[in-house]
Image (tube, rainbow, N blue to C red; front, top):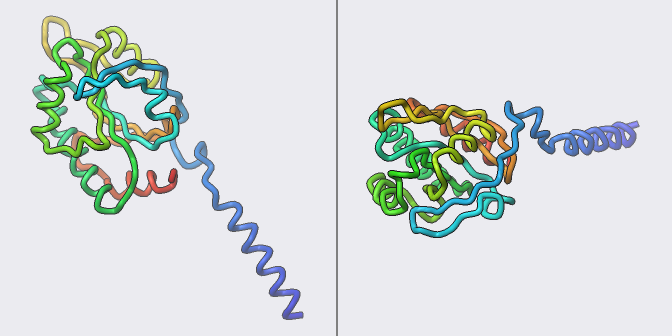
Length: 192
């Protein structure tokens, strides 16, 4: 009898173990797909979004360096997240899309990144497309706002970062104020 109970117990454990693989659609709140985008990073290197991030876990945000409100706090908070990811040996890339590509040249983005002491080894600041392209990209792929304010050098954009697995958009987190780095890191770990 004990032998049968043991066999049943082991079989149940095996079934539970098999069911532990994550169902992305059940765990995460988003289920979008990012579109193709050709860009240039802060070092002037060409980046094809699909080719570069096809098999990677990455976090995406929309910023512009001339921003007089949320972009600096967002980037500062993402820098803190990057440091915590490095300390915990959590492997994910970061991407900041400029929504002001006319002003944000690679040189301007490089200076902006350096002012926050980011580790550029796994963080691309992207530009090199036109204004209409990045607005459509944000609106269609991420369902996120991105538009220039009329008669201003300021832009409307999302204050969230998006968790990505390849071309899949899985989750979003607000990074303008307090950031729940533990939740973000736990979610990234589920994808590795």
